[in-house]
Image 1: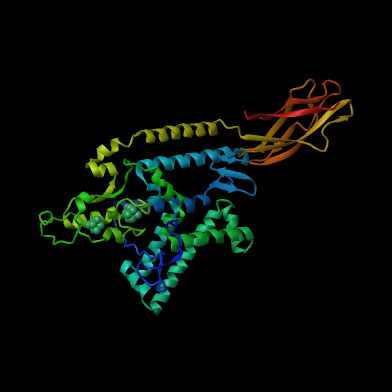
Image 2: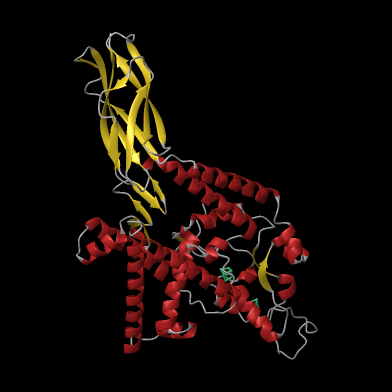
Length: 480
Ligand code: SF4
Ligand code: SF4
């Protein structure tokens, strides 16, 4: 059986045909990882990548520090079981919104992949973004591609030790701050900072170190291996591609036969294509592939090889676009950009778009009309039904009333569904902003007014001075 690509493979003893059986040759099918030293390049796509790094990291590092009234603007407070997103206060009972958000994210990924391949991977994926940041630090401390290669291959001199130490120190600081920020979405970030400084909060410290280490390992060392071997999206994306998906493509018809040439020579007359075989496109590739070999699953669609090749084409005074974002049909049929764009609106894209629009509208509408009040009812199992003073039959319930607004609320509790049914306990309950309270509610009916068995009753919880109202069903038990 063929082992999965990228997995360590067994060492297989092979006896060459015609050789003595005692002369066995051991061939390892495992290829050791070669470190990639991407060359930096400037160009349209390199600038877009940096713009996305700034944008995503501005949001990621900045958001937990913003306040909304008296609280953190975005906080997923798992301990208190409250999720604050701008003006929204969500409870675990609102899990449906998270489900909706995940479905919308997955569908968006399908849609963008069908239209423009791995744009997410190349420009917004945290793995790409942090790798880009860590490589930038490496570049600034250790120098450009050839300087880094020289440094790694050279002996451990003082220069090498201090450069490596400075790089590691900055990497660790960035990784730690990233872990701290991430945990700050789940624990109020200012409190978290205080706890860390005082070395309190064992779990918080653990998670900060855990996510810090994950960032350090993934962006500093594993890098393209995460995309190649660990990310499931890289594996199933080919199922979402078709011949009209925009991907980074090399035009072999135009580029081949490749080869070096003198700038002054008419290369076409010399039987050469436009590729001068400078390998710049390979040197800039963060996953270390040669796009001239065709579409490969390792390609994250970052477009850096497009920038690199366009630079070469400019120098050679050839038209740009030997490597370009194009579709397989576009390259094969020599389509113009507008011809390719016309193929964007194909059935699968229309289907994904329609479902996405319906889901977004549905989710938005449901958020707008959402009642900022939640109620859970639990029957008191210790005393199912009892006769109390005044000849009444009583059932006891525990109600959890959750105030999903930013202000204190007074709620009134009433009940209906049976003749003579009344609330015998407190009917007005005060609950603070974004808080919840368990209250014991006693329902009573006149003894003998209902037949034995279970009867459906409804609790009506109404916010005073507000339209928020919830009716919850339960049962009232009448013993024989
Ligand atoms: S082949 Fe080009 S687009 Fe693909 S990962 Fe390498 S540099 Fe990026
Ligand atoms: S950068 Fe362009 S010209 Fe240079 S090897 Fe790559 S495809 Fe050929």
